Every structure is written in structure tokens, then in C-alpha cells.
Image (cartoon, rainbow, N blue to C red):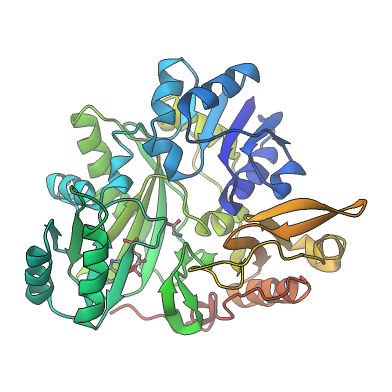
Length: 432
Ligand code: AMP
Ligand code: GLY
């Protein structure tokens, strides 16, 4: 089978890598891909959010399956165009992608499906905003209704900061909306539910680290690191979330005539009252995917093709490595507000040739190759630049290996968190 992966981040590099380990996959095309996917797949330039351009590419290369990585092509209707043209596709329609594209829509579907989530109010004016903030009280949770690449949410004790973010969201246009939500306490977890329109198969749980600095300080980012599995999670949590969240949502979407095919990413808070949905995304999470796929022993192409075909009921149970995986993101100086790009990155080849390489791999995100004299030089080209993924017998060993590898990468000015999976490795995470 020939598979086309759309996107250019470390998540897509992880997808490409896992697909190349699937014996049923004989070729992978990454579009546009990055210097990391270039080593494993055929990189082809494309505007991934242009449905006709993607269809033309899929036909030109006669691909058997298209896997859509990021949310933008999904919201733009790339999956609709492909399916209409008879091209097999893993990813939801634009209508179904509204589960991520609009927080207000997601809340409406959750209410209809009886899914446990935080109380919320959708506001369209500054007066409504002020009233909602007062009604819920601090800490305030203020969410841009639309897509914001993981940066549209502000959680703050300070009413003025909450008001300012709410006002900024409302200023985006005449129909702009902002969602004010009840604060949910408790550790967070991410569960990727593979859906075929009617059925759900869950991957192993992961946890990501959204804030830029150690100790969960500073602004939200796309994600600075992740680990899997979660040995502190209650027994049976994944099954419970499928039964109470993913399956009811998949049923509700089918009932509405917008069946969900793809990844339903369930972001959870494990509160004292039980699991509550914090958010849905309609694609694999980044960087959780890097940790989760590093542990998947089953063939990824078979899984995604079965979901695209509506055939998950015939799939064998997934097999997982007993090892733990830790992913540490290296970000650019100035990320998330104003990342510095064009900085040289060295040391990856030595790392790949070292004893660590048996347990560690490096995935690319914001990188590109430039010519420096006659030699190619890898430089940074985005906010999140590399994901360093390590496996170990337990989280402590995976962490040690990941951070040893980070030390061997020469990337001036770069930033990474030093506490990814630290508390979990010390068994310090407590459920409320
Ligand atoms: P979201 O984009 O909705 O996932 O929000 C980004 C981050 O903000 C989440 O990962 C949480 O850390 C935090 N967050 C979002 N909603 C809530 C909430 N209701 N209560 C507490 N924290 C929240
Ligand atoms: N890791 C969070 C996200 O992918 O949205």
C-alpha cells in the first residue's frame, strides 16, 4: 500500500516513521514533509489546505490511503474532496472537524451525547463575557471559539487578564465568540480514539505539557513534551472514556449525518468527580503522538486503512511495547510569541551513530536545509523545532536517555523543559 501523509510537523514525521515499519506499506509520500521525513519518504511540496491540489497529488502518485495530520486541511474540507473522488482517506469531513474548529459546537455535541465536561457559556459580547466571568469565578478559563493552534486558551486568576483575552477573541470579527468555562481541577490526560464512523479503538493514554516553562509556568504552547503510558491513571480509564465519551460522540455524529472517521483526540481532566472532557481535537496530538506511536507494535497502516474503510470491527487488538516513551520538544528562542528562525542545528548525525540511537530517535518539525557553501546545513524554521523521543524500561530511564540526547544536540538559543514526565517518573501524580 502507498500512503500519503499530509503535514510537516514532528507528528507527521512520527506517522511516517511508524508507517515505514508496517510491512503492508511499501511507499510513503510526505507532503510537504520536512527534512526528517525526507530520509524515510518521498517529500512532495503541496499546499496541504488546498483540497484540489491534494487530490491531484493523490491521483498523480496513485496512493492507496491519505492520512491527514494537521487540523487546517480537515477544516478546509480536504477529506471531503478526497472521499468524493473515491480516494481512501483517514481524517474527518469539514462538518465533523467542527468538533475541533468550534469549541461552542463541541459543547453542543457533548450536551446532546451526554458527555461529561465542564460547564460553559458561549459569549458574543463584552457584557456577556463579564457576566460569565463573574458567574464562574476564578480561576478563569477563557477560550477562543475558533482554531488557534493550541494558543487560544487562557487560564488565569486575574479577572483583568481574562477580560483582555476575551476582548481580543471577540475583536476577531462580527461573529466572533468566546467560551468561558468552569475551571477543572486534576491531572490531564490525552486519549486518541481511532474512529471508523461507527466504531472506536483507543490508543494508549499519554500526557502532554502545554506551558512553555518548567513547573507549568508561562504561556500555553502547542506542547513542549509528552510521555506514555500513564501508570498513575485509574485502571480501565481508556475503556471508560471510550464508553462514556468517544462512542457516544461517534454515535451522535453518525445520527447527525456527519459520521466521524479519523482521530477523536479526547483531552481530559481527571477531576474528583471523574473524567471531564477539556477539549476535542480531530487529529493526532503533537507531541503525544511521538510518544504513543513509539510504543505501538501493531502496524499503523493497517489500523488507519481499517478506520478509513469502516472496518475497525475486523481489526485484531492493538499490541503495545512494555517500554515507556518520553518526548522532549526543542523549541526556538522566543517561542511561542516570536520564534527566532534560521539558527544552525548540529549533532544529529553523531547522535544517530551513537550508542543512544538504539533507544532514542529525533523527529523534525520546524527545520529546513540550506546550502552553506557547498555543504547542506540544517537550520530552524519554526517554533517547535525537534522532538527527541526516548524509550526505556520505565519513565525514569526514558527520561534519562531523552535528556542525554538533548544535551548532544547543538542548537544555540534553543529552549526545552527539563521536567517532562518528572513527577510521573517519581510517582508523584495524585488524583484528587
Ligand atoms: P484546550 O486548548 O481547550 O486544550 O486548553 C489548553 C489548556 O488549557 C488545557 O490543556 C488545560 O491545561 C487548560 N484548560 C483548558 N480548559 C480548562 C478548564 N476548564 N479547566 C482548567 N484548565 C483548562
Ligand atoms: N498536544 C496538544 C495538541 O496537539 O493540541
